[in-house]
Image (cartoon, each protein chain N blue to C red):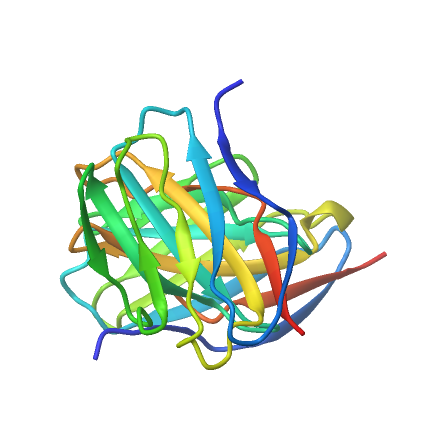
Length: 110
Length: 113
């Protein structure tokens, strides 16, 4: 069936370093891929999205890469800060609904 | 301020009782969603609605029911048929038409005692 999944459940990164969070997906028909950030006890917040016909999109300190050949999505966070500590979810938009992956916990080491 | 509001934040329920979780949005979004999140897990789709008076089952609809009588409101009822209802419930809304940026409420943590 359709699924969106993550390679690593927990990622520890030194403050100031770059973070890379990876995601695999299986539904080739998805229109958009989205990254969300969820802090403890709160609802997810939208970070950035990428349309399926693009391979890269940049935001403020974040870059999303899409490789449709291997069905892989990644989120790069530059100069990781303590405030970036959270769980990050990749999600896909298709058939008028959003399907989420399991999530990766990012821990920033001061 | 525009946003999406869930209430209550914490809810306790006795086994065998139905309980309804509230979700209201003033973003003028057509689409609304309910997700369930278990500890250390991702979000699983329970129900979603693209328009008033219409809704579809998600991946884990059994034991849940919804209504969409107004554009602004999408209440979720957790029925006694739901075998393991203790979880964090998240409501979201979005525009329709493709982009998929969903705005989430702060969630309701339901505990069955």
